[in-house]
Length: 413
Length: 181
Image (cartoon, rainbow over all chains, first blue to last red; front, top):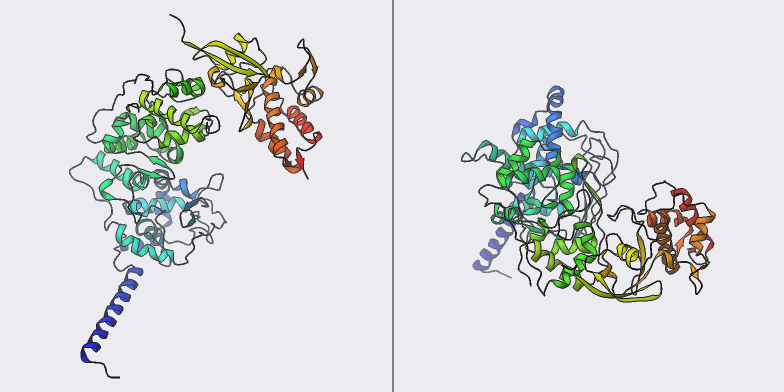
């Protein structure tokens, strides 16, 4: 069979497209289009003296970056990994980042660590999953990443393998090459000359180390953070991570000084930190220097309106039923007038959870309760029991409506 | 100015009570003490930690549930059935005790309590545990762990936990149907 010239040309074109396409896919997989933010200087190992000098700074930065939140499982050895993340496709486990040569990062070079932290690519060109917030850590300075590396290498090596992820497809890591193409910023942190050094420091702490956006910035269909909705709040693990834009924080009753205090104390007139944010305080922000906490707060509250003061809403016929439930099962600890009891139960009058746009967090807390919490400086709150088995769903809904309209500034429904 | 109040009815230890006017914000413990003269439930910490004030709520769905009366309003119990410490033992028509429950008897035989202030709470907590095990028995190997989990919220300032827990274990092991295997 003879093919016409046109058909031969057509086949050739299709073949060419396939070859270019395949080359493109390979190029993506080998990271050709993913610019590294790591300089060549890191190929030179740090001397033992340099490493030793970096350790104290590394310790502070490791706390500020909250590495332990994921890499230390509850009750587990420090930095030995093992905390599971249940994702729709399977469970992913945090890795062992202690300096164990077999199961940890003991064999990692300075360059290996830099590329993992800031490019999301581990040794052997293995792509990290973005559950590891390398999109945020990409903004860390090279010197800070070196310091974290130096500190982690001084930790106790834990000879313990992390569980393998239970993802159904073996090559999902390769897919991260394409994910990075869409979601990984091309550059690291750029100092904004228009802002003061304090505000720049705050922005660095919020965006790079604190990786606040990983929970507080909503994600698009690819699960990448949406830059246009930076820190506007998102739903994660079934609860709302609040809007922490300046206006959002003001709505919750914060100004910069109270926010700085709240991040180090874990509680305040706005209530107690709950869900994952409690662990953030526990493992990370409580250790911030006052200056750093203030810098973060100053950055987050830039140009914010004054903190919103909520006037106490009157009990209406629509909220009377909720009020009765409040008196029956809440007021014993939170007070008839919502003032709370120190070291026992937080105040409701100024509680940020009641001011959130949705009642999701409130309903979850009322239904399931909260464990006992301890905070810096000996402060503590008692456990709160859940009421799902004592109140009907409608009673919980009415109670939430009463709380939100009385002390949350929401109109009664 | 009068204190806002409204009528309520409930069943206490099998007997109907009310309708009776009760202040809207009165805690259940005060209602039991001051209105019904049922003073066996103890006021301890007053903030829901020590569990000396617990009584049993007989919920139609959940079964026996422990409730802390120092932090729960009286009106929560409107139209509900409760058992206080006075309602555990069998009594005659005059109200005199005919027979203690196995839990109460075991606490005496094991010299479980010392000052006795926490005892009403411990009796209540143990009774709820026994009734739960009657519905869902546990393996023999889990008895100790189950006792510790169920009674952990109850605080004894004399620190007499060992003999309390020994007494509870004795009741569980000597009552047919609570332990499997």
